Image (cartoon, rainbow, N blue to C red; front, top):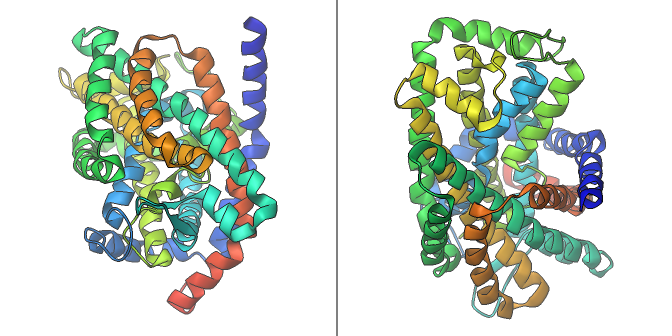
Length: 447
């Protein structure tokens, strides 16, 4: 077993190493330039499409707004709380700058993924709209590439049970146990029951629940973070100076902080940024394909707003709260560091904000990833796989809440990276389709 764990760790370091991070950033930069910076210039257009998307805009299963909320329910998770804290501890304050860079090019990636998801999608016998990397690979690239679509779907199913299910249940159980002294098994059973009630209704019910929970959890967590930034407003500019300075220069050890090189800032900033917003991993377009929209470009614009909210808003607030309170030099890491920062600024309630935020974020992640895993399972085995998948998904939650998950986490995280490979190849090969559709819609993409 030890040999297997060592092998998985080594392979995980390889697939999440510099080549993968460069590939994800490179594809995002290529799409950004190919679109002539359109995602940056059309940010306001994206918010307008999101507002209009509260109602159906065409054929599909859920309104465009609910499609984005389903995606955010999956992406806004432990990465926004624990991931940002870990990036700062290992990469220094400059890691936050590189997270922003990841988000800026990731907006183009998410845009392209959603454009292709709507442009290439199928309708199954139940009338459900199916799309995502496996479909735009099969329909856009042809039969020679079907093996790559199958590989993506296999990686998606297995990774989902780890990173989107058991790992999230484990995070919720530990946060609830530490804050409210509720046993892990009780949290796991409660999550399974609530998840089952939602999953029975399929993507429509998940979209409805996500559209209610995502704004609520954002209001609680972001609201608390903004209050702290106002209270520590005199430290905000020095914190930003730390971010920009140490994005390009090393930072020395101080207190419990071990110091960090520029390479570490880039590596951990990019890695945690990608982990948080999932741009390029191919998960988000699976949900966007279900949007009630006949307009690939409009849904693409809605999709890119998700990366903006996830990383440039929520992750930024977490990072700045950690920096302005000064706790990043104390030696803590992960969710404990974020909790310490909130508690120091808001004694008596700060740790509860983080615990409730983490619980809501992780729970909604299990809902969002259930959509991804179910669609991948349906692609592989047909509609007969849906009910068994949902049953297994619910049963896995209490197991995850009580288990030691180091090996499962490593395997799932590795497969999560492997999902990106076929998706990134498809985005590059189908980029002319994305550019053409954008030109046809806008005239000149940057106009």
